[in-house]
Length: 206
Image (cartoon, rainbow, N blue to C red; front, top):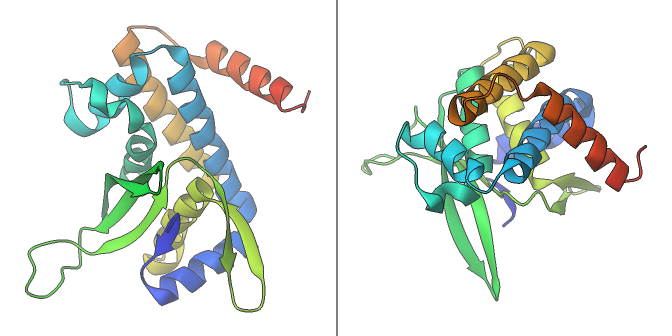
C-alpha cells in the first residue's frame, strides 16, 4: 500500500537493486531529501510555488504546497530521460490521509483503454516499511524505494549507464535554478549547507 510495484519482475529487480546498489541509490535519495527539507523550511509559499512551477509553469496555486515530492520525482524522471510521467493522489486510511506519488508509463497502454499503465506508487512521507522477499524482509523508506524504481528502469530495463554523480549534480543545479527563479536570489548553496548542518545536529550526527 505504501510502496506498490505492479509488475512482479520489476518488483524483484527493485528489491535486488536495494540490496546490491544501495550506495548509488542513497546518493540520489540524500539529495532528494535535502531539497524537500529545504523547500519546506525556506518559506511558507515556496512549496506551492515550486511544485506549481514544475507541473504548471508560471501559474501557481496554494493547493500544490503538498506536492513537492512528486515535483522532484518529475524532475528526476526528466533528467533520467525515462518514459514515465508523475502524478499524485490522496488516499484515506482510517483517520489518516496518505499522499501518494504515482509513476505512469508513457509507452505502454492497456488494450482498449485510452489510459496509461501504473508502474508504481508510494507514499511521499518517507515512512519506513518492510518488503518481504520470501526468504527475508528488507527495511526501506518509501522515497528510497521510489528512487530505486527509477534506478532500475534506467539501468536494467533501458540498459543505460547511470552516472550517479552526474545525476545528483544535474538534480541540484535544476532544483536550485527553479528556486532561484522563484525567489529571485543568486544562490541557495550557503543556506542549504546551513540547513544540512542543522538537520545533522538535530539527528545527533555532529
